[in-house]
Length: 424
Image (cartoon, rainbow, N blue to C red; front, top):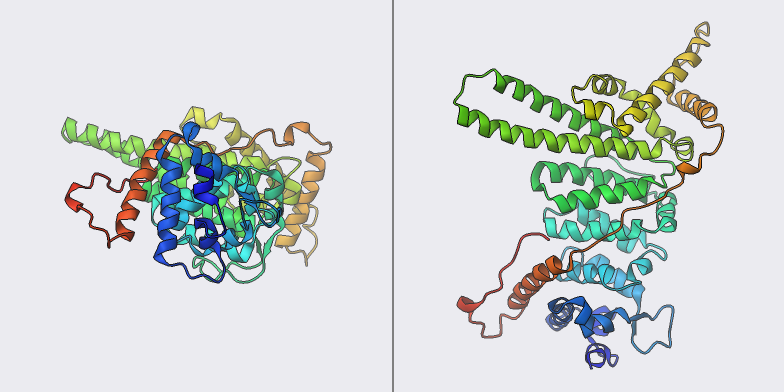
């Protein structure tokens, strides 16, 4: 019954919603809201509408399917609807509930109509809930190794005009995503402090870096600069703690301020650990030879690692990621110094970027003489939703949207019980 009521006939809600020549009237919005309410109201294990939704086929690949929709048309439409709450809610349902839609997005990923709009939406958004949806989509895409490898060779040759921080051109989609993900982590640490955004962003970064290929300088620099930023922030907090310990203020005031500072310090230390862990992913015999730009950025930030080498936190000092990054930086610094000593008598010798890259490649050849099977990816981060939490959030949010889009109905606003809730 649910199957027929949701999908029967070419005049179904989804068919109407994705028709390329049909304007999106309020009726279509209301139809999608009804579909979303049916998907989220009942638990997944007893929800017949979810069962029907999961059986929706891709008409592009199965023209004879009775209950189908063109995934490509739907994806293109969703790329134009990323700034709307209805569009992001439908996208979230498709990538988290439907078993094959996330794979459909990436076969192949349409950069102009979906990929770039997704990155732009993530760049522009200041709403944690929308950011949660965008990160969920990126994480679902990054769960598939073949997709990640394709994203690293899919080039954005034109200037990315909406990215205002730098002139970004001739960059792979994966490198652009890394730049924006690091930017989002900074925004989350400074403003939102949302643990779910934190986990999704770092998980997606880890998945992308496991198959890094010719990282763009901006991507490499963003990773190194992030570690440098968190190291400076943590050092500043430690300095404030030292001043506080020596201050003669009231005990209660000191304790309260100290607690806040310790929370900040713990947050920055966690970011430092995670940031070094991301960098360490690429410092392997499998990945470093094809990503010399990252080592160049690390060598350029030698003073950072000199300061980290004297960090007071013993657990941080001896952590595997920090230790290995320090060892690799020291090794390649020695390689560059030795190569330069051999050219001291050459009056026209210039230490150019290209020459440093040559030294790094030679160092890789000597250091990674044989393949190490441990370099191969053994795991990745996957999206794991809390169904109860998601259902509670979406039911409240969707009912609030229903009320907004049905102002022509005689709602008793003073008796409404569903209110908008904070991010998932």
